[in-house]
Length: 356
Ligand code: GDP
Image (cartoon, rainbow, N blue to C red; front, side, top):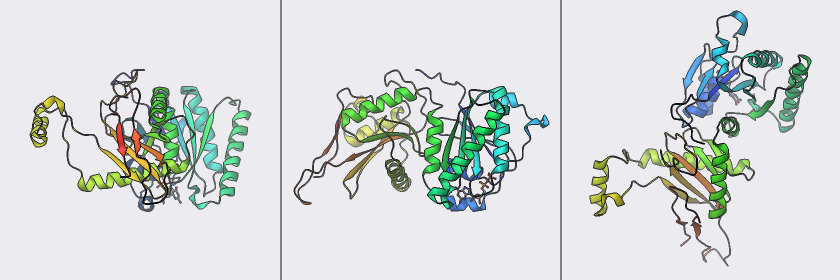
């Protein structure tokens, strides 16, 4: 499934009414803004074409809420024809009937230009709502939308709904799901992760884009929110540590870097030496072990059939329960072995953690 380099980037459109939370979402997910700081964001007032530099290279187009499609100033064909997904944000803490009307208009407009677009509705700001109220709101929005589209003869449009908030991990999870659907390599990645998980006795594996904490793929066992949350918190910790203690590793292909390092580690053969990838292991008090391994640019190039243009460091983050077969806290449990019968490129067999 080789992706042709330079192929058009999958495009996402982020849309919704003014103050629904669009700028906050893109600031929190793609620019690491703390959620509380979004209170001071200026509301979106124009179309913003925002290139997002994760390995996906997609764009978020932040539409203002009050745009009228039919006033002739927009080239709708250009906007919609190569868009992979429309994310429509609805403020669940506010009156949403007008937002729904606009959503329905948008869906109908889009059908003319790109009927295969994925329509993703973010029922947003649900942090302030009780669980019951959240579900009632979702039911109501789904019902009204289904009825309205059916009345207008568009009953075959498939829409996905997500309950989201910038104050917890739900916004990252929702984005992960949206983006995964746009990845033609998803099946291959999933298979590779399945192989990794079963060969290495790992409980759950995620392929993360570390900068946004969106997970690009995971093995096919069900995702439980907690393991996603703990992995993404772990990435924060590692990134913070890296910011303080990290160093510029330069370009691994530069001979001078290799030469310098060669002398520092006393090797006589420069070809033996490659820059180490970033990796980290953490054992939690409950016995869970988290392992994070960077996959650099090019690492994935030759994994099976997949050629994926990963341009920034990405990591695996995996969890495995420490197997407790010991008699007490002083008697150590097993080491966690990380090995593979058929080594995946870039993932060397070996022991990743030991309690000793
Ligand atoms: P935009 O006009 O759609 O870009 O909306 P903004 O991003 O400017 O957000 C409007 C207000 O909603 C801001 O004060 C945000 O802090 C707030 N907001 C955004 N997302 C959330 C959320 O998930 N929960 C809560 N409680 N408030 C949010």
